[in-house]
Structures are given as C-alpha cells and as structure tokens.
Image (tube, rainbow, N blue to C red):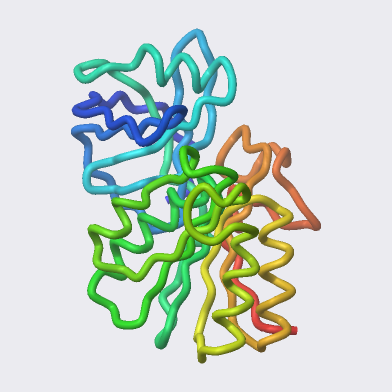
Length: 242
C-alpha cells in the first residue's frame, strides 16, 4: 500500500462537529486500509499534512484546529467540496491480540483507536480509557459508547470522570485485572508512562507514534527515530514487556 502516488480527489459528504476545535470529515470514497494507517491530506495552495484514519468505509478523517492548515480545513471545507489525499500509508498497524484488551486514548489519540474499536466491535472484554485536559476537549466519547464498549474517562481538571492522568487509571486496572494487550495513542509523555506500566506488569503493548511526516512512504527521513521511520515502519509499533 505504501506507494508513490498522486493525490486523489474525494468529495466531502458530511461534516461532524466533535468538540469546539475538532471536526470529522466523511467522504464518499471507500478505501482499503487498516486501523493505525494514515493518509496525507492536501489542499492546493495551502499545504499537505498527515491525518490518522477515523474509518475507511467510507474514508473518514478527523481534524483538530491547531494551525493555518487545520484552521482552513475546519472553517472552509463543506459538504460537496473536494479534498485530495495520498495513501493509506504505514506498514505498522494495530494487530488484534486474543484476550482482554484496553484502548488508551489521549486527546486526538482517540482517532486511530476508534478505527480499531470498530473492527473489534462485539469482542468481549474490550475497554476504552479516554483522557483529555478538560471535559470540552474529550473526543469520541459518544462514538465509543455506541460501539458498546466499556469506557472510563479522565480529565486533568476533574471536569468529567477521574481527576488526574489517564495513566493512573490504567495502572489501577492493570494491577487488578489480567490484560492481554494495551493499545494506545497520545502524547509522548503518556506513551512513555504506558510503556513503563506494561513492562512492570508484563503486558504486551502497541503504541501509535507521532512525528513530522512529509513524504508518507519512508524516503525523506523527516520522521526517522532511532533508525525506524514512523511513516513506513510505523506508525504503530508493538512491544513485548522488557
């Protein structure tokens, strides 16, 4: 799937306001893609940036407004408009592991994990932990609930759910339950703590990493870390407890 390709045009069918700074764009195009993969979204004359896939049937992506490019998409892109994409990219994807699974999402990390959760729908003993700084920044809480998954929420300020870090919630669950795998996407600090916890409790974990991605298929080296290219070898990396 990771091929050099020209951008393809797709038509936006629906736009969903997820929270005060985040929108989901549903297109009319179906693509073959796996949970954890991403696309490069291009607006002519503006820029091209990577976005995790929210779904592949149809192609759906979610945009948090953080700069000029994302602001242009969120404020100007309407149903019926065209947008261009390349991909999907990423050889490192989420792999299903038998047994009890926990999905840990920090902020926009909920996006690729929601795609994964849709594929796990109906699987027993799957649980989702959603974390954000405040209640208004939480993402996809209703979407995960609609899948019938158990959900626990944490906010840094205590405006909803557990007051504190999502990793504190995870630590408590891992100490009391037998878990086969932890799937996570979020800040580097959060992922580092999750790695420590999974190593401590001897649990397999799969992490979706973020980096500065320019080409999408492993030639520019902008996302290289320790010899691994996030866009090509990742963005999802699986680990066994140390």
